[in-house]
Length: 219
Image (cartoon, rainbow, N blue to C red; front, side, top):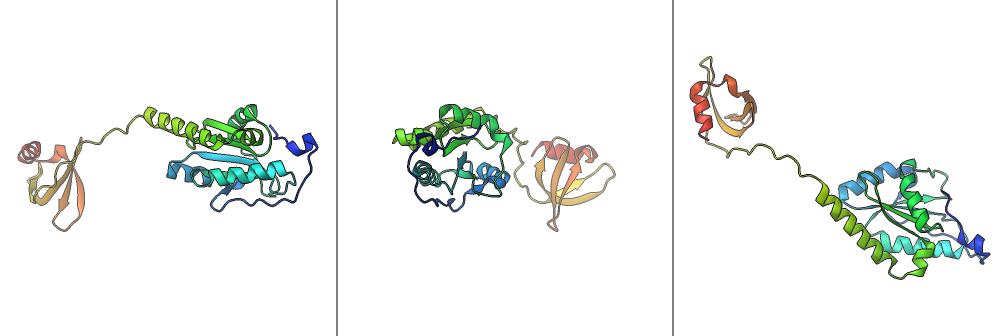
């Protein structure tokens, strides 16, 4: 859904343009890299639709306001109508549609979590200019959404407890062969042993001698 230039609709006067993308922000053509950056940093991803060449003071003010308030705490992606490399990120279409229902005047700001691109909140020029607390409200919405996501994410399945590193001792197998090694970890079907030369190996428990199995059970 295309964002609307408020100046044209209201027949407002225009001024010179030139709001530059903030340092560290990504272009729409770099969306995949931005998404990975947001995941790595544990931040929400913010998609800003604007036009850096617009002569509309409303668009200019809103763009500068969005950059100033959001660049420190979020990963920004800018879809700039003036950028010849601009691309439409189709994966964001459902979220952008939700933002357009909140407000549809340039600049339009869509906030998503980076993993599944689920919509968190959105705003536009009309909402920013009409509410001095817009950025704080956006921050609050993001904090609640990311906290809820963290709580709903099941914890990783813990690995089998790692046995404490033991002293070097003799280990024998069912063929009678003996090696000297230290126990590093006991897994379901194998033991991890550290040899005296520093090399670490995995050895099937079923191939250990009965004496070594008893010793292993006692560790």
